[in-house]
Amino acid sequence: MIQIIETGSFNTVQDLGRPGYRDIGVSASGAMDPLAVKIGNVLIGNDEGAAAIEVQTFPFKLRFETDSVFAVTGADGHPTLDGRELLPWCTHVAEPGQILELRQPPKLARAYIVFGGGLDVPVLMGSRSTALRGGFGGNAGRSLARGDKIGFATVSDALPLPPSGIAAVEPAVALRDVFPAVIDGVLPIRAIVAGEHELFASDGDAFWGQTWRISSSSDRTGYRLSGEPIKPSATVEMRSYGIVPGVIQVPPGGEPIIQMSDANTAGGYPKIAGVIECDLWRLGQARIGSRLRFVRSTHAEARAVEQAVARYVADVRRTSQMVKRALKAMA
Image (tube, rainbow, N blue to C red; front, side, top):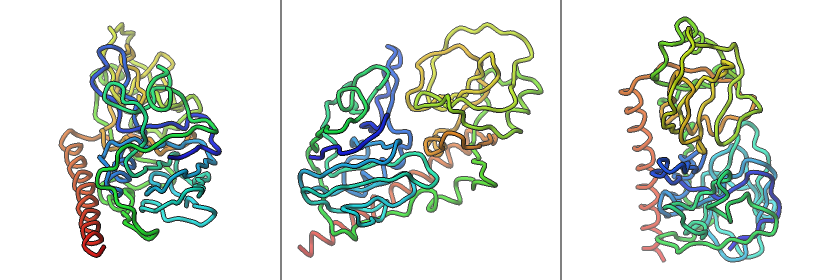
């Protein structure tokens, strides 16, 4: 069990989300950086989708009430346990009474704390994720608050390890040949042309050619981008259509909106493009004010990236299991 000692707004319990309910108006929710959750869970020995804490407002502190194995993934920066710096993307063991603190990371937006067994909150529609707008899921459907206590679910093959435990090379480094590098502070995000792209004529080129900035009017539902407005060449009336994370809509004001983890389930603004799924975690780690540009992609490229990420996750799992078997044999 853990107890929250210090927290800010919008720190929540999240897993990989609850897809399959958009037809009844329920957003999938889930972690903004799902890859960080997967890797943390794989390191510990949980199912990939075990519930974790998503921290996006810092500082954040919790106290361990029981022994626990845990890992901190996601944002750059070093967490501390009783003031001692810890290696991120690595398993650690905590004893009752010890305090884990996460401070403001230097560049990235969100950190994830994954625990052996995962967090024991109710499963609703197949997920433990918090849906803040709906007020359900996670920890009573709300952000974490000081004094909250949360237990751990049943541990599968999670094994307490020494502080210098199993670690993974973070995705940004391990997959640097797969994900385009940040150039002059601008994050390249790959996207595929969407249904209404042709409506924008020359403004379509402006969409791809300019640098956009994530505005302060952004949250887990969507990122609103600031830049030179783009508009369709003719007024068009559209029926509402289904929406998933990654869809880029252009409202009448001309500044695009990227749908994110808490994406609306339907909408009627023209779609100019869609971010490939494997680039969404990079957006999830982009702060307010970050600059980005869109790079034309293809379904074939998106599939190749997906396969590379799957190989990376499988490699972390294979290495983790190998080390655990060796430790058990030595015990």
